[in-house]
Length: 384
Image (cartoon, rainbow, N blue to C red; front, top):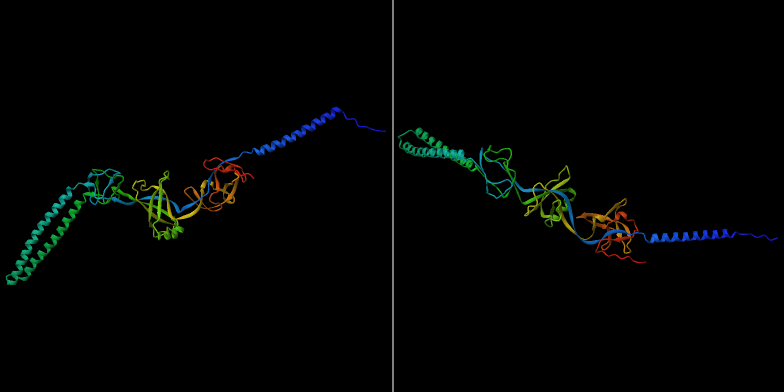
């Protein structure tokens, strides 16, 4: 007896349609994944070349501008100011008249002292004549020796009085000279503390004007004691250059020379004070101003340098993203020796001519495809 299986034609058609749909869906899904992989977006980045050049070996600190010399003007007499011959903040020259005090009292004292001198000189001259005459009379036996000695003593006393009078005349003359105050140097005046009509005592606690010499000028700064041996070593070979940069004017540094190293280290801070001398012809440096100081000790040739913005910091230390010829990013650990003017000197990890990413690192992972955005740098993807 033969048994047969009967399949419903409608069911068979439905199964065929379902199988075809499933195969089509799988095929479309695979194509979509490949298309998505092929269309993965590149990461836009900015790159720059790793360069090899000579860089300065510098010590960088914050410094303070200091007047080359400062004079606080104080009167040496008590009197009334009758003349002020300059303006606040004015440049003055050595020997320029600054103040005049009322001279009348001092002129009268000088005249009195000169009159006393003249009077006592006349008395002394007369006493000298008397002394000579009595000496002759003693020799002739006309007067007693004691009387002649008394006349000689009177003459000697008048001679001493004349010397005292001359000293008094000189003192009165000096006091009269003090009624005029002259500048002792070229410089710039500060705030005027007292004005015309003010009575001032001799040698007051505070100066009535301060003059600062600002051409040339000092920049004072302190460096750690650890670098002192290296500074002394390079100073023995040549003069060391010091640059002072005003905040906001980094493109216009002032250049000077190291001229002073203090004779002791500050026990509190472990630093030592240094001074650089600057011509300051443009007067951009001003006493009391803070500046960024760079002391150049030497120059290092053939240093590997990249911009500081290329340096990234991770758990294992510093690294950079290097763009390879096939336009993929490689994470490269580096050792930074020091930073100079927004540039990092690389001790190891990079070679001259390689390209490093300076912007866009936040979206990168090792192996990422990149698109270079900055002009002037052409990188071509290499085909396997």
